[in-house]
Amino acid sequence: MHAATTSLIAPTANPLLERALRDKLQRRGETAGSLGELEPLAVRIGLIQNTLKPRFRDPQLVLFASDNGLAVEGITAPPGHGTAERVWQALRGQLPVSVFAAIQGMNLSVVDAGVAERLPPHERLLMRKIAHGTRNSRVGPAMSVEQAHAAIRAGMEIGQSLPGNVLACAGLGVGGHESAALIVSRLAGSPVRELLQSHPQMDPNTLTHLLVVTQGAQGRHRDVLDPVEVLAAFGGFDIAMMAGAMLVAAGRRHLVIVDGLPACAALMVAARIAAPVTDYCVFCRSHSHNGLDYALNLFHTSALLELGMEATDGTGATLAWPLLRAAASLLTEVAEGDDPGPTRPGELSSSPKG
Picture 1 (cartoon, rainbow, N blue to C red):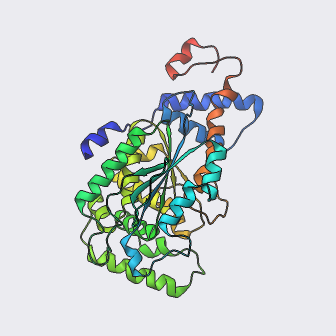
Picture 2 (picture 1 turned 60 degrees about the horizontal axis):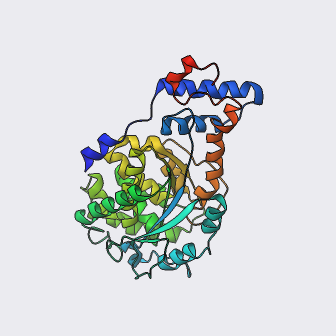
Picture 3 (picture 1 turned 90 degrees about the vertical axis):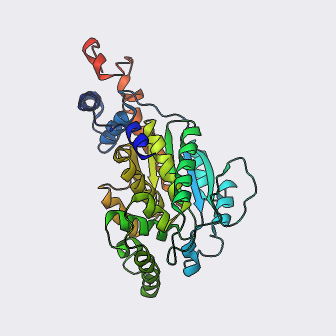
């Protein structure tokens, strides 16, 4: 799977196209003024789609839901925030992420990657359950390597089946942040504390408990370094499926919107399988957890919007989507005017305008 997937994902670097994109924006700016950070974002979108005229269609927001075995260690959600409850709130339009997705024209679906409870069918619920939650990584692997591969394959199948050319990914589940922190910590060689501390004023007893649990899991799997084995050691099924979906989306030259620490962990796994996958990603956030700042720094990036929210992962993606559409429009509707201009940089020599 690794070699085949790697060969299917091309880096987006293209100096000729990048220069043409920048020239096109510069000509537009000479008459309408600069639009700051929107312009490099527009260039990235053009490089992702390999065109001077990027266009989006059928954007997909997928929430990957799974329970994590670390929850038995006292890592629990507040009342009403259990994984199954959150899934149904999302599907019934009872969360801001659902409402914003509908307003912005994003198609929201939820994947049952490994929710502990049995969920009844729903038209926007994709049933891909590998197991009823992962195991406790403090006492053994969260999943078998075979289950990790199965979850990655399921994610790849989801990525292949979705319409459109935009995939926004976010995780949903109790213990998801802690499992993601363990994966990122191991793959990046970073202190897990930096990923767990939500803010400087975090209750020290809560942080100490999280460190005892996660450092116990790290010690249990101290020699594991292979990305899929790291995924199997620490979980979760949602992260594994996101990694698979991201790999396929990048292979299809689709934009990938990464929202939250579990999605960052999935991308880190995917990037160890096929490094160019990161070329296709932009990052969002739905909460102010300091651990996410640390993870974004590992990718040498920042979130598109910083709104100080404390919301379900995926919310930030719905709010960043209009920004991405606006950036792409600089190269299509705004930049073209009456002259459609070229689509490929090779056409520039025969076109009087861009």
